[in-house]
Image (cartoon, rainbow over all chains, first blue to last red; front, side):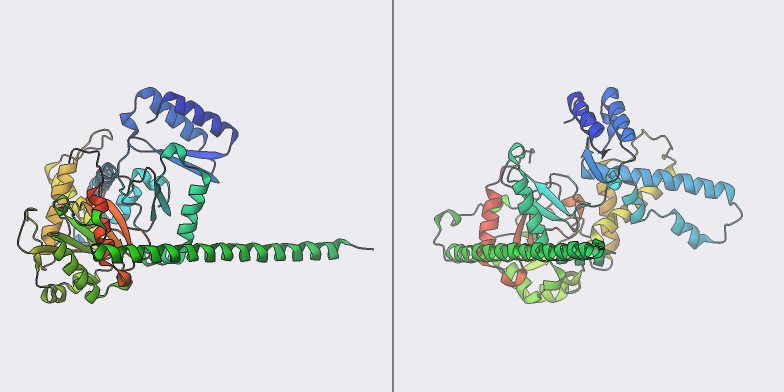
Length: 182
Length: 261
């Protein structure tokens, strides 16, 4: 849940620390005031790169997949129309045309809301829950899914240390899986 | 006298010694963690043994009817068909009716015929199968190509369909595809595989996902299907235990879900 108070706190933090803030999700579902503040904050912190915080707003993974399929389709449609209009004499190369008009996996991943940030290494779920609840199941193919029994307000740095140590125990395995993917 | 060079050498060696000490501390910490996990594993093995002997009362009655569809993710490097067949036999004994076996590389898909031949208590899951009680277990085999790549193929199905109907506009705000259309397109992609006698893996959403591997990671199981799925890590397949399986299913039956299922 994002409110104007949260935005004010974020803006104050971003003013004094070099943090880049991204908002990932369907921002059109927010009211105009919040949407404008979010865009202003993203614009103001765009040049920082050392520490990046991505906040998912009005986001769920299946909606992200549908949105990226739509965006890819729109872009392919534009490309398709442009190619048809300006290359009318290139009709003999049918196979090449078909491949260029196909939506590829890389197009879908490029057009996702979460394309602003790399895939996470670790996903932490608090509250002793063991499900993803439609959050980042696409991006966490090779991520450690950590489940903490504490609730969100009680989470502390030692919980994070424990999760990072668990990740380090299997670090070679995760690196091998990511390299296989490439 | 020039003290700059000896001073630099001194700082360099202090830096090296501090680095070595920090590395030693890091390794010592991880050895301690290994020992702790070793002790926890021994305790878990003992508990599994007690559960499989039926000595722990609370695991005696499992409400297996709550588990309509079970998915199992297996690390491809550890995929031994003998272990898989033994696991399926345990699941059949517990009364699980619908199982999806997933491994990233598709090794289980390639061994599908062998598994079905050796384990005669199961049939292949068909696209239009409804999850009702059946005498035999239904088995589905899936791999990485049924996940992200299937979504890319479904995207092309939708794109071609709407290109022909001329419904795509360049107006950004308009939603042109819905979740149900995406679901239908994914089913269509599944049917494309039917002619090769491979089920496309676009079946129902599993209630529980058991991960047999070194870490708790779903390894690319179709994202569309694990929105609200409980995920349990079971350890490597070679050290699987019947008691741990019962405990995982018991924990699932005790979970409260907050959506209207």
